[in-house]
Amino acid sequence: MTDASDLGWSIILTVDPDWDPSICITEHNHRLVHCMSGTFKGAAQHWNVSEKVVFPLIKAATDLDYLLIRSKRFRLYSDHRNLIFIFIFAPGDEIRKTRTRQIAALAPEIE
Image (cartoon, rainbow, N blue to C red; front, side, top):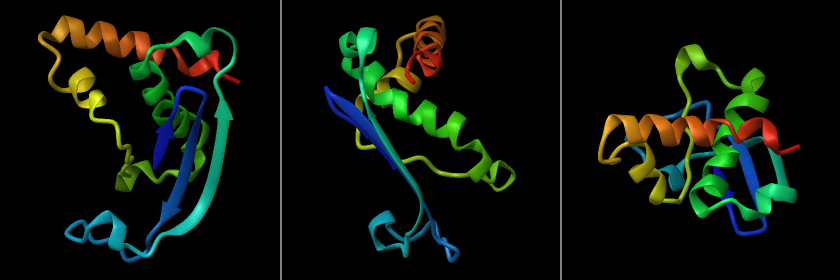
């Protein structure tokens, strides 16, 4: 699960050994695996909302890759609906690809 505000970001990685996709996420038996957070500094303080929101998603997938079982797939949860527009409902493929590249370039910029 990830979140971001104007000032910072957070990532909470949990596991549920008895995962059932038909059960609501809030009803699962989450066990904490890893927790991390940080503040936006320097140029990152001036990022727009979409860039700040997507940063912890990218950071979780890159920095915590050793904890993610990609062969079995994993789920990332975020409460920010504006990401749907960026990744799904952008008016054209080229806009979506350009925006995705811009956002993906953010990952190495934050410490």
